[in-house]
Length: 596
Image 1 (spheres, one colour):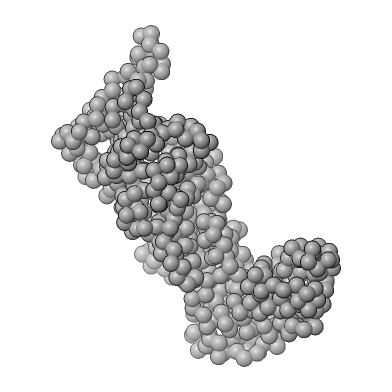
Image 2: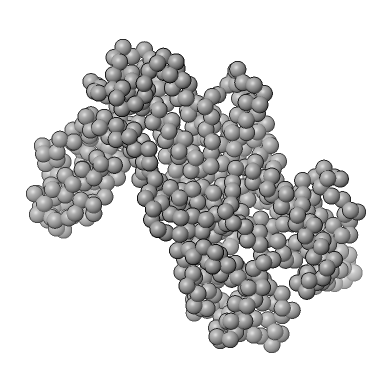
């Protein structure tokens, strides 16, 4: 905003006048003042003690006095250790607010020329999406939207894990126990049907292991020699050899799963620009393994398996190709990285994957560097913590995961119950009510999973997430609906909401200044969230803005205000809050209702 640039210029002039320190205004950083101190912008004085020959507090005091006298924008100041907190004149707030109203692109960066690919979701076709996938999808989608807002050219990608031993486990169990069952005949969603047989495989496999152990075999050996696992390995080899029957079954079951995934993605409101499939990338990965052998950066062991030595990089030896010639995850990731770069020559490729794979991505980057690939340096692993429940960790093999579809439905049911109890659907048609419940459920779920720093492991509490009070999605959504009602009333009264509807406001309340401060901070918040890849920064902003507006709403009258200028200003202020709540929540993939 212009005001921040102006204040930076004034500080630059003061440093020159008082201490003979020459520094460009655009090199000076201003921060929002912390809530416990008076002021709107804070300047940190610690870096200038050596040049000024004075302590940080002395520098702050001298700068504050100079600015209060020479800068018309500064009303007052206070110094806390090395932090100079500046209070802004009311006329500046009004000028700033008008500037915000005129700028419908505020918070959106200009075209940076930077190309970024964000890969998220990455489901396996042997099971439906679960709670952990929801955090992944919401995080990936939000990061992509935030990067777009920062002016980057972004492509959203989804790498589908559609091949491998885990897929063969579902296929084999279906072949043995399925009796021709289909999603249509069973009325089971396609991805759930595949997941059902994955669980069945594990159950039957464990029973075989127990039988072998009872017969005197060592448990570890039993795991390798159980007939089911040997059959699954054989099926994988047949798939890689193009066996018609195996490939046809694979296509049939994957087709069911994709229909299921598409329905879930639509329901949770995420999308993708490009899908990649491991079945189409692993062969290219094998070619890169051959290239590495030719270059001498990979090596073969006596059993024929291919490895890379990464001990110089602080890692260890890593398997790239099994002795039987089948690929591992890293093989196909090598192929996918190349395909992605060919499709979209990115400056950065962000992988949204849980922190359990930290080592994997260190290896991938190191391997591609050894091969001299130009895209290696751009690889970035956006590592996030797992989602726990009060009952503990989820395990898909045992069928103890929290299914995404079931959780979303549970959230919708909870939203309906709470909304009806609070009487917030008066005058709604059944379809409008249904849409509201879905909007609130997704707002609660997305906000709860995104408000936590991505790196932190978290505990998900469905009941807490949908509370209409506190730091929740529904609280922010309700704030927007409240403002929408105010704007509708203003419209019915024929009141204008634009910069021409108020020229001057005699007294601006502290709560109004706080709201404007929050609005002004939006641009810096979007920029920070983009640098940190942290939707939690946006979520926290939306909450603080909603909280500031609710304080304003409680303390200051709008329609009972007798001063026409003040009333019009407050309506305009409300409209701006609605816009920034809508935009900030939109970056998180969260819709906000017009009515509640």
